[in-house]
Image (cartoon, each protein chain N blue to C red):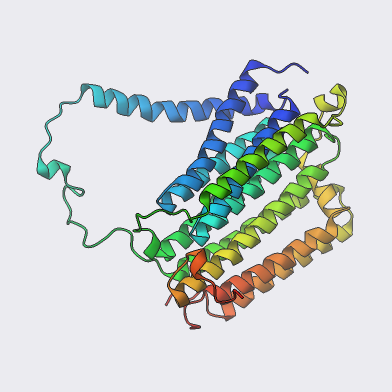
Length: 171
Length: 119
Length: 102
């Protein structure tokens, strides 16, 4: 299928948001600003899902990542206040090794991904992706019904554990 | 492409971003600039804040956020189930009820622990 | 449509940025934010593969939903641990939380 110009422009803007936000997250001195950059990055990913025709996932990303996880992180930052006033460097001493490793990883990934011949579906299949939420429901409660239940157990355990850890009275 | 459905969302975002930029930009261009200390104070008709703004928050906020996260995800799981309700067999209803029951258990635990009480 | 390779490269870049955050941040919350970025990159990959390789079955999307769920649980518990550590040890610097280091 032909790539149309609008899609490329949207993709470029979203990439700027996602990767720019990501760079902000890892480089900002003030962790609070880092968390706000994280929201920007998540918002870029929401756009990616829309571009990939995964409307429901876009909503989920918006609801859970921006609406819940980012809020949790902001709260946690405000709860450990001592570090916010800190203006010193947020990087540890091995940051340049980390940078080297990361750049190498990226180069290797980019080369390998380029060389693999991906089994992309036929144009006809690509033109009509299944995007109905009801089908997602049938998948979730059909083949994936056990993970569906286990997810709730995971959430129960996570909530209980987090409440025990975060309560103020226990010390 | 589904993108066409989202074109309206894109236009909305564009307008929503442009509107304040144009409004504030125009105001910035044509307004007179005569600053004085009273105008520049943070609260022109209030009292000055005392101490640092970066204060320590209570951990209680975090627990509320936690409970919110858990039920946020529950909503995400229940929406596809609800949309596909009529195409699903009866056991799907049972499964969904089990899911809700397990998460209600989580809520009951938090409640009984007194973690939701504001102290 | 945008070529699949672009999505994969963008996801790889996001993953590497997150990895850099994990490896170079002093603050435990910063490390956790790096992990969130990496999980997002994984999700972009999953959804891109769904769209380009198996657009007729929704496996990729279902997987992405589970990854998001696990990410939320991980963030909730991880941040609670950080808050508990901050209360006891008065620090969230990863290098200083070394009581279990051998």
